[in-house]
Length: 272
Image (cartoon, rainbow, N blue to C red):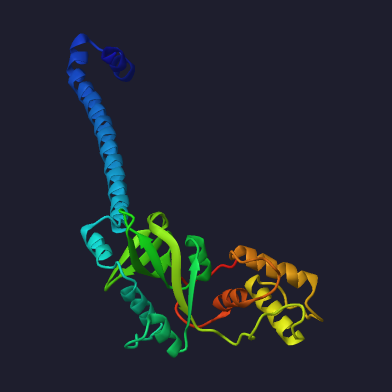
């Protein structure tokens, strides 16, 4: 092949001439082969380095959000009573515990309302308030934490003076379903609101639900069928008896949604 190439390029040459040019042509082929080999090896090394870097970064993220470490385990063991978690929750509201008073009593003396509810992660997310959450450790023993903030799939828990980010899946697995929170009630009509209530109360209820569901203002002449259905929808979504009458529990839930005061778990609050 080299001889043929030499004949093509140099024309018909003597054997001596072809022998003189052979080392040059062999050198050219060697350079081409070496360059191609270097490119393939270098590209493979670069791809491997990028893959390793990506895997390392993902591992760091996972490690940062893992709750299975010694400090976290020790903090859980030190919080088998709710008092510390409730004190931390008071602190988020810039309130303090009073001597010889329960946390709820201390909250009420400082203009806050106490509320305890059963639910799941979605319940907490909808209410969007910091809360004392009743948890169960790996041995099914109760412990108490303050749910401080939510960021995506991660939740910030306070145990004593320490705070830990945990994954939502871990939280849901250990959450008992009971939580307590504080809220500051806005101007809510007293007593239940039903078909025999004053027009002012009925209109307040309609406006409150319109705000929750982002509906336009609708002037009412009384407690009509549409309002009844809207009240029932709200009650079903919050595990209440859907009787269509805004009793104490329904009004508390509305207060929790409508109040603009106090800390929140996240800046984004969704109503469904």
